[in-house]
Picture (cartoon, rainbow, N blue to C red):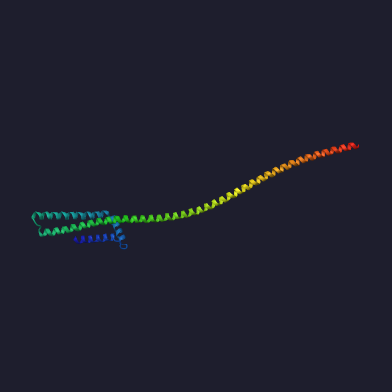
Length: 216
């Protein structure tokens, strides 16, 4: 029994040490082994409960031997041997149970730590991805800004050209209006000249007729 308890205590010490100190892949191996062991939770609780029951039995045996020695005034050599044996067993079992609890808590918090590191790694990857997307968006924004600037310059140039063409068109319209007015004036003048010419022809004809009348 003692040898088994020492072996269990030594094994728990090695496991606790490997959980505390990372030596190659040993920590991951121990964590996986503990994961598989925790899957058999009923068996583990049964073993722990049995050890606790033995621990309490040894503890009560120690108390019983002490009470008997107190009544007799001193313990017999046999009671002393039994008392020391039970004390050693109780001590080993207590340390074993305590170390098992420590290992369980260490395993629990290491799993949480590993999960947090994975989340942090995923968050870093996501952050890097977002930063790359932000850089790409910024580059595209700068590119679009340059394109918008060029388009504004083109629109400004086209606006100036349109204003210039409109001014030229207005000037040409004024010239056309002036020319049309001049043509209309010339047409009126020509019409007046034709009327005057017809009148002169009529007067000339009348004068010729009068001249022929005098001759006859």
